[in-house]
Image (cartoon, rainbow, N blue to C red):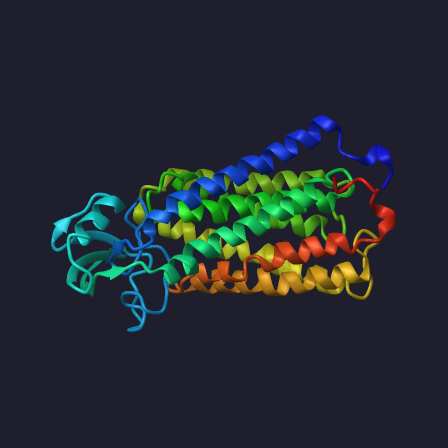
Length: 341
């Protein structure tokens, strides 16, 4: 890369400002999530539209019995109708830890009532849920920062930066999703954007397949915008939300699988932008940090949301770190001495 390829000062400041804004978002959601430590809760989580998300831990309500209330709509606690997630948590917390409360759910028109003991959110559970989201978001943001510093060097860097920002926003807003839920719409927007960002990444990494085909990128983000619009329209409709959510998770797995195949094929003919060592590091990150979550998302979508997807965050940091290592392994001739400043 030549000196002329370095990001212009104004563009560099703008890109760094975007990363700083996402970091501020992450810190705010982390601070907000601290209220969960020691909190009393039903043993399941609730989103603002009263849908129980596909997120949980093995010891939580209904999981060990094989019937967790994922993607069901919470109607009542102790036969008293609830109108919001906050209302549900408040009514449940009226019990002491270990006391049983009755929860009424509906899914596909079928109403069921289950009795679950009230639980206390432990520090271990906090780390397994919110800590994992924060670490995954931070790793994606670090990838975005590093790739944005090389914004004009290669289309691959732009694709990695955009994917990193989208992944960071998705992970950070997930920390707010289960309460207070003020960033619910932003989280849905990030989820819809991830599919487009993953397709963008597959088209430019490890090789640029977009040259002369800019319309393909327009179609990719046009699809993401359309999905985001549908998401926003039906976000408050619990039944429609679950359908759109499962579709978004399922469709998002497709470009990830394509991307994985393209990276694997590059092992025998590595692109100059990464080199052989870079491709190997990238593939390792993809296998650990993208394939496992993509398969989990796809299987959860196929099951109607009956598999908890929060486990994807436990390995979510692997791809960003692998991609950063791949960029670092790029042949030194492609990077100027001061480009990482």
